Image 1 (tube, one colour):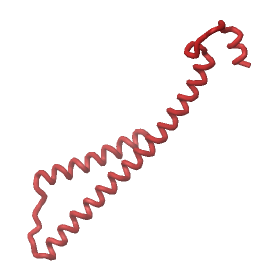
Image 2 (image 1 turned 90 degrees about the vertical axis):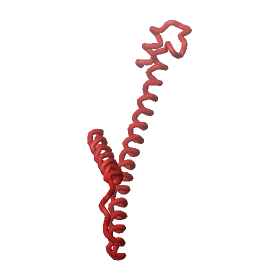
Image 3 (image 1 turned 180 degrees about the vertical axis):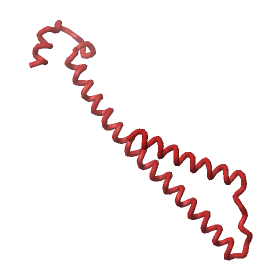
Image 4 (image 1 turned 45 degrees about the horizontal axis):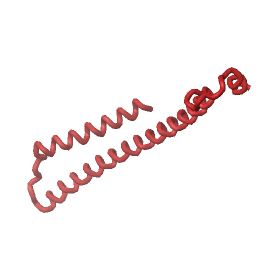
Length: 106
């Protein structure tokens, strides 16, 4: 009924860009697409967070394994170099930032 009332009040020969009914229909499509994109973004964000967590855990396990191998081989366990410490801090801070950003989005 609303469409009929709008059509009655519109002048003839309007282009699709000027027709309010077409614009309303396009807006509905855009809203639907936006909602789909938001859902996809949330899924990607969660997967990214899980990947970062997995990388962090794997790196931690690898470092412990290297230390154990060094102990069994009778090698002196060397502390992390400054570059390695910075890389580890960077990885940890990035992981925490991703976690915080995801929590804020939800």
